Length: 226
Ligand SMILES: [Zn+2]
Image (cartoon, rainbow, N blue to C red; front, side):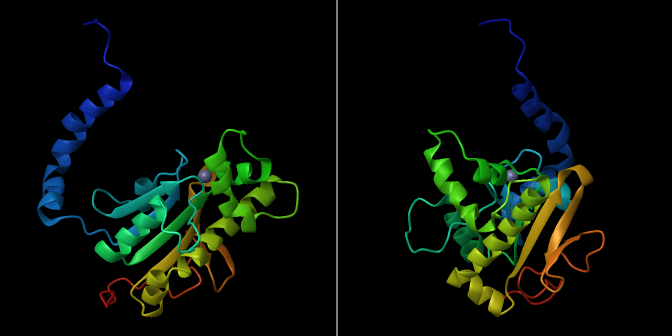
């Protein structure tokens, strides 16, 4: 045994148990007894600056989260491979029966930049994965404005890909599911939501709803159990 101080991560684990958990113990125990019933599937970029719980003011049991490089959704191509993202979408819809899917990209996204500029030769999986952004790229040099536009276009592209999945499309068409496209601007602390009527992303502080995707707005309290 060494007399080394506990590392920072270990200290944080202990702090969770001693500081946070006692204040929320009942909530955690209820979630175990009753199971999880999150209403929202959040598909977000892995970027460390994107904080789904903080942005949405949610806590344990409220968001089912998929994070990957770029917040991308693979195309519905019937390949049934080891697709973690698609498997989680299926679980969220079929087991958890979520009512909303949020796709959340963000400013200064390394995935979109890498889609323009390329990645290390040995990053073969990453190189393939980034092709999911191809249709969102613009035929210009990646200026800050072009990158931001591409980040937003990538969000809309993923919503369109989601609609190619029959289990998504059928639920959206019978109002059992709504899709939301978000672009989080880190330096402004503001999420811009995609509004199909406006045909653009609108700052949440000015928007009339949490984003319509290409489809109907989510209505709080409406019957989504069909
Ligand atoms: Zn990103």
